[in-house]
Image 1: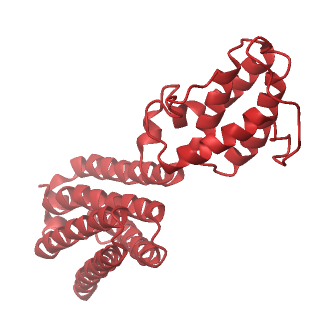
Image 2: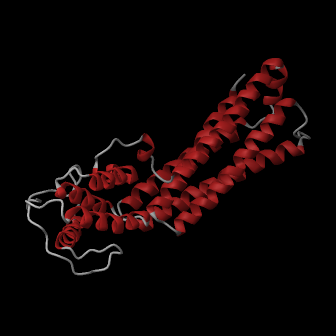
Length: 295
């Protein structure tokens, strides 16, 4: 039997959700929750000396109705209610055991701390965004490995071609992107504290710095074109235009993403956009020394 001092979530306080959870438990234990979540009258709760005659059915009804809520993104306090429901029956019959197993597999442990959590659960934002980030890092990493491998075959030619690059402009762009990444991180922190307007301004500032990066990069490419340097001038420029051009495309996409989440400034949106923007920063931090500085 549930006592008056039982916590609904052992590891985390449920706060306001706990109050609603208690109400739901009251409905479950009074027999008014049916299969479809509608309120239907039923028999009174049996005594503790009769645990198996009615409780498993009521728990099954409650679990079935609440799982539909889970599939629609119900809050964790609802899952905690089911945990209490399972504890309430105080029985190990097959029906309750199956329900408990199903709930644990569905995510009960994640909400109430009953099972181990994956490292992936700790990542901010959506998992698909992190899959995209990992794939992009692999692509750029493979490109840099091939670049360094080909460079070994003609170190003098690669060094001469490298001297035609604008290292000063690339250095400025590095500072620009790092500052932009800082603003994106600041925007996420501000939004989590409820400061929506400063968060939006920080996102717009990060996007504007991304535009500045593209402007400086465009000036460098225009200078190359004025001096007759194109992608097939040397093998070095094959990789240079491919890697930096592909990165510039990511910067442009990131700028649009930052502006979009500045408009639709939900915390989850900012988390995804910030993660993507930090990936853009990281790739440039790798490209800059390898392509512009490595002799």
